[in-house]
Image 1 (cartoon, rainbow, N blue to C red):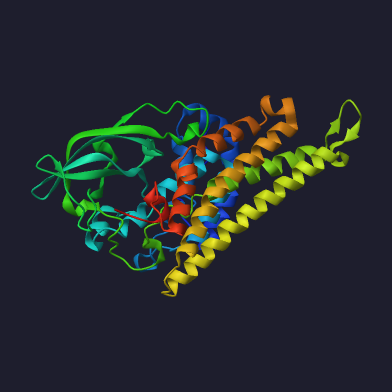
Image 2: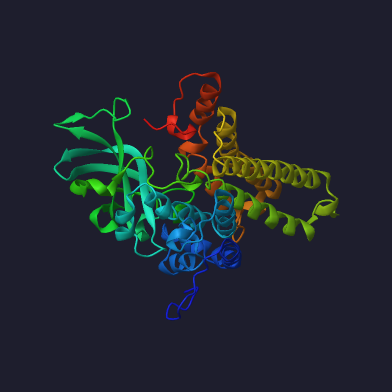
Length: 399
C-alpha cells in the first residue's frame, strides 16, 4: 500500500514550523505502516518518500544555502514527532538528516558538488572501524562497518577509518596516536549485507556494509575536529543532539495509547473502571512524571547549550555534560516508562494489534546503542572529575 501519490509533485516545507507541522501530520500514516515497516526490516520506498516530503532531511541545511537551518531543539522536536508515529522511521530520519551537518565539515565547493539536492540521505558509522591507507590524492579504504541505519535507502554513506601510511597507523595531526578520519562515498560503492535480524527497531534496516580497496579522494574525507563552517550546528557533538527525539517520541506514543485504553476499560474481576483503579492511576502518573522530567531536561539543556554557543560563550564542562546526561537519561526513562505500561496492561500487551510489544522491543533495542550505555555515564563522571573517559566521543572529545 502506498501512503502518497508518488506521481504528484511534493512541496517540501522549508521552515521550522512547517517541517514540524508536516512531521506531526504524517505520524498517523507512519503508525498505520508500522507492521509493514517491521516485517520488511527496512523502510519501504513510499515511507522514505513520505519522510523526504516532511523536510526532515534538509532541516539542518544552512540558510545561506537556501535551507531552513533548524537548531538542535527544533531538530529534536521533528524527530520526536516522527518517532511518535513509528520508531524505525524516526530513527532513520534522525540518522539520515545528518547530510547537511557532515557538509559543514567539508570544503564548501566539495559540499556543493556532492550534495546537489537538499533532501539527500546519508547513512553509516563514523567510528574508526575501517582502514584508510594514504595514497596520492586520497585513501584506499577497506573495512566492514555495523549499524548502517537507513543504508538501504541512503544516497551517501560515511565510514569511519584509522588512517595508515605504509601499513602503519598515522598519528593524528592533533597529537593522538591514531588519525580518525571519516570517508564519504556514494551508497552504490559499498556492499550492503543483510545482517539486520533484530527484535526491535527492525524497520531501521541497520545492516552491515563493507568495501575493499575503495579510492576516496582526500577532499571527500573529514575530521569532526575541523569544521569548515561556523555555527552551533557544526560542533563536535552536533550529530548526537537530536537523538533523544526517538525515545521521547516512542514513550509518548505508548503513554497516550495506554491512557486512551484506560479511559474505557474495566477491571473484569471487580467491575472497577480503570480510571478509578489505584494501580492504574499511580502507574500513569509516575510515567507522566518521569517522561515530563526527562523531556524538560533534554530540551532545557539543548536550549541553554545552543544559546551559549550562538552567543560565542565558552561552555563549562558542567554545561557540556548536562546535555550528555539528559540525552542518555532519555533513553533509559523511555525504557522504564514503556516497560511499566507493558506490565500494567498485562496480557493485552502481547496480543496484536496492541503496539505495546513492538514499542517495548524498540526501546530495548535503542537502549543498546552506545549512547545509552554505562560507559557514557562513566565518561561524564571522568570529565567532571578530571579523569579519563572510556568513551571520549560521547562527551565531545575527538582524538
